[in-house]
Image (cartoon, rainbow, N blue to C red; front, side):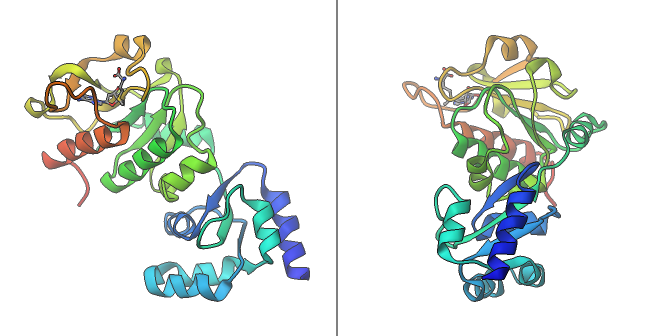
Length: 252
Ligand SMILES: C[S@@+](CC[C@H](N)C(=O)[O-])C[C@H]1O[C@@H](n2cnc3c(N)ncnc32)[C@H](O)[C@@H]1O
């Protein structure tokens, strides 16, 4: 019980400047991609480490050192919605200045994805997961959603730490030619996307904002049969990153 109380105090002391890692897979990716993790809890250490043995032996020693077992009531007091794996942790949120520096660095070997005022936290998380998988330079969001919100981190399975994620205004977008995706644009299939592209996608509700349209160098469309209005935001990002990678871009 002393351990649990110490852990609770450490959690409360670390919360400022940290993001919630909700669930085993989120913690696994955060550890794998070098996140700084001051505290991690589970209601069942044996089960969590067995999951590591089965699915992620590379991070098992680190999880063994990090995870403290706490009573269910303590765990439930730390998370909004208990996760089936009953694992939670805090990770230090990367400093904004360092993230901005990485996004602005040239030459760039992989695109930056821009989500223009995304509304759905799960969509934003899915896009961060895609960006991590394709080795994109990063994901920038405009608008009010915090791309490090716990539900975005959960949707991204902790892969924020495998790429660069920040919120900016349209005026602050990283350098590079802006290719904005819109059903009215030219067919993507006729275009080779450069590695320094800034790939912009509109809001689920209203599409691209006037400010983003004004900043765009090219408007591109995804192939889509007449009478279908649009694709889901995350699937649009997936198709576009796949198109970029199919012409030789990362990953290895
Ligand atoms: C769900 S859609 C937005 C639908 C919105 N009602 C509209 O008026 O555009 C979200 C974003 O996905 C991208 N998208 C969806 N379908 C697309 C398509 N066929 N061609 C190009 N981009 C598309 C666009 O960037 C779009 O802004």
